[in-house]
Length: 287
Image (cartoon, rainbow, N blue to C red):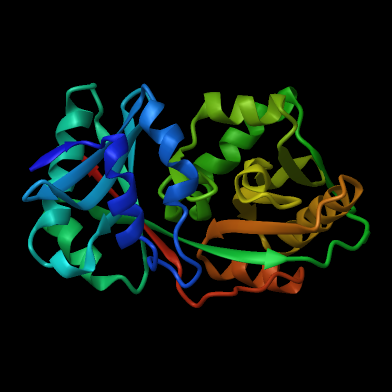
């Protein structure tokens, strides 16, 4: 049976989620908030009235939804529970006019990838996460915060960008990916969260930033949501961002970026390291 999650499921669910990762799981920290959300639904799979799996689906923007937190009790894996939960999430999304649903898997999670492929999901991008705690005050030469007058040129950069194409047209805040459109970009610029690099009179690099990760993980940290440009422009923009982060008394930057060589090489040159060998595969399904 698949049904909306109830508060009484919490103890059993947290028990079988206790060892999801080496450090445990984040479910306990978001459980109460998730059950109160109006634009999302947490589903529970039960067997003989006992919770054996959960999955969440949420509305991101008109026509788009995000699925996450696929958890199954280890005693009941390979019995179709994840498939049944996925189908329930898809039905919920369809009923709300969603056209595209996305989710993410670790690059080495081959079991999950086979399951979602059978359900019609296709891989659209590959992102990685790198970290840097060396927030030195090295000067940037041609980078600055974007202004509203830069929007048209930035959109043109993205339209012609191979990195943007390989990203699937997506950006991420923490570990949730969504499409990057002109309205999103305008909001980022208004909130002073877009760094651009200029080569003469031409914008040839862009970094989207956010601080939600610091609040969520209780760290003094910023993140990048999307990175684009050539080697030199990315290095310069990261110098700009590191200096700004230091002034803001942050201790770390998490760089979320499309897994393409030029971006990885520039981040490495800028002092970022990848703590885990895995990357994140983003999959989507049109419904």
